Length: 219
Length: 219
DNA sequence: GTCTATACCCCGATAGAC
DNA sequence: GTCTATCGGGGTATAGAC
Image: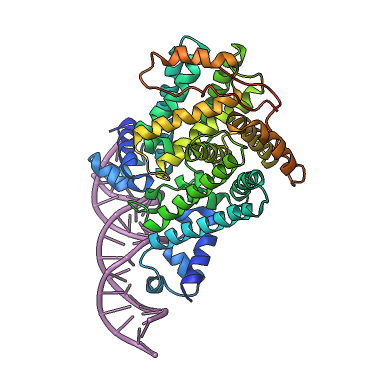
């Protein structure tokens, strides 16, 4: 038995019932040892859970980096939104873990490791937005602020759905997510965006609804 | 000692350290009794925490209903966004509690009481959006879908800030929140919105940035 | 080094006495 | 109603076997 085995089993237990489902005794008995043996590999339960969080970040990152296979800035932005959605729907417990409050893990503040992961995520979204601006698909604004709008919107939509605030099935939610993304893009995109997006999504396996062809505020 | 005293102290303990900070023994000793005495008033710790959640909903609702003092649909929508922001910043632990996963309270599924509160929240946002559409301030679309966009965006922005994903102080975040709301509104508002919003916010105690006077996608 | 056995203290919850 | 006593189960520190 080594650290890998402990972490693997801890992840499995976590996704079934959250951090309360991960107990040192349960973990140990599942691995065929007694609880104190785990302390040869981990200093505390908190450390195990923090490593589970890191695993969640790793998997989420792998969903997002797949977006980099897109061949245009528009496609990479779209695939980022799809990666965010797919990860949240396929791994809801791990998704929750990405945004878990520190006190829920019994720790005052997150270690630098995790803060660094959050910063990388933020940077990833910034980069997707920046390259769309450079391609003329998004209005020229502070990329970081616009990225916060998109990230916030995606996270909020997914959070509300996962909490069961709305009586929707998964398919309905996917449609609502893309429709809502379309509304948000309507406020920050340029005229070139709709055509670029049409090219991207006509071969996609799902059907995001692009911004409605409707004039909007011009002040 | 009665149910009110228990609930009051439980809320105080919760906001200091989350659900782990609420223990029956701690609660009892703070109230000058022993732990089993609490079971005369509450069946379990879960029930106490569920009541704390209900308190959080009650306080959040009071922030939102203040928005109904606005004299126009535009003002009521703006004050709703302000209520959401103010509550989250002034009561971050209670805000987290509104969207806490059921398993974090040790319960399989939320009771009808709480689902009903969530439905009321959803209805409140729907109503604010619908009356703005009727006033011609928002583009005519499904009010429920548009409300989900606004609610999702507000919740996501606040969540990301509260998790400390971005190194911002509160003032910076307030500015970022309103700027982001402006971008989202840009995608769903009509030409009348900007002028209505200008009237509302010129007397407000904070300065939300209205949508930039910039032409956008017309497809 | 790695494990077991044991023990300590906190927890939620129950039974039964006053 | 509230107490004491108690149970089962947590996290974890220590001691000692291999």
